[in-house]
Image 1 (cartoon, one colour):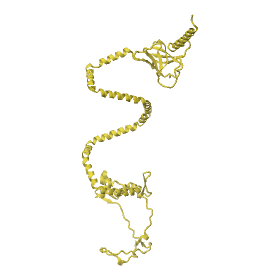
Image 2: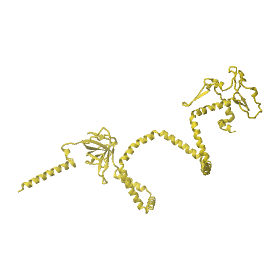
Image 3: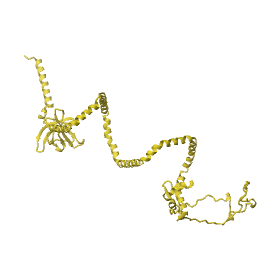
Image 4: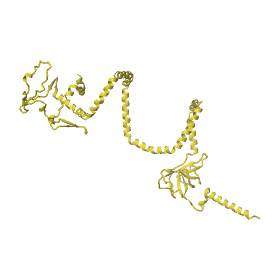
Length: 419
């Protein structure tokens, strides 16, 4: 007689067994698909099966999303029907289907590798074309290629390489161990900074784009660097002479500075004041340097060269009106040109005539400052040289300096004062 307690235990055991069998059947045997369908079908067309089989897993980014439900032989290859869970609705249609091996024993599966993250997405009835499918190399082809590779290596040369490697690494066990340990630390550091490394790789596109935009400048720099290097190569002898004699020259310069350090200090100190004055008048100095060549050219125009002779082209105008002033000067105080003795200056002597009667002299009759005829002006802002309104004030240069001094006519400006 079975007791009530035993009956309850048997009922609980049967219930637990049914639940376990149902879960295993639904989870692994996919018996739930016999009752209701929770997937949608996608066909992947392969040139060959690649070892795939019915019931193999289908993964997306390494996560299982379905399984192979059927395989059909076609004229162009094999059509593999993929049953993908309906919950996985955001798998891009632009996807490559690859047959891979999970382990060394050769358990195949189908991996969906998307080319983009955007839609459109796979749906029931979608087809992955043959051009977007890949299968692994067959074992036969792999072994055949490996055998050919091994046969292509000369045994004598291989023996030499092995012997040389043995000689090279003999007695370096500790060093190799240290390298391996350091490599492990390097890999750990790289793993810890993985996010930084990926961000660097991702943002390096900006740097590379900048380099691409500056391509013309980089090419110009490389071209100029090549010219500079070529100039250095052409001047190799001069550079070697400079290096050989540079030490003696440096010693002479050092001795010169040591002998004249006090005087040089005073000179530099005085140049500070001179520099301040130059800075105050820098605009005027710049204008002089612009106009001075035209003034020099006018000199060569006055003394133009004709053959071996020089012709002076200028004229003087004498105007005796008004006459020279004599009133106010005592004729008795006039000195002889031969009298070289010291004599007190007569501070009361001055012209007492009216300026209307004679050429009156004296500070009281000096003409007040006025504006003369402007020959030319130079604008510092625009670097423009503007001539005056009087055409006769312009300088006409006929090349006298070039005929006299040749191409180095400018050097006379510096050398002529030195005699």
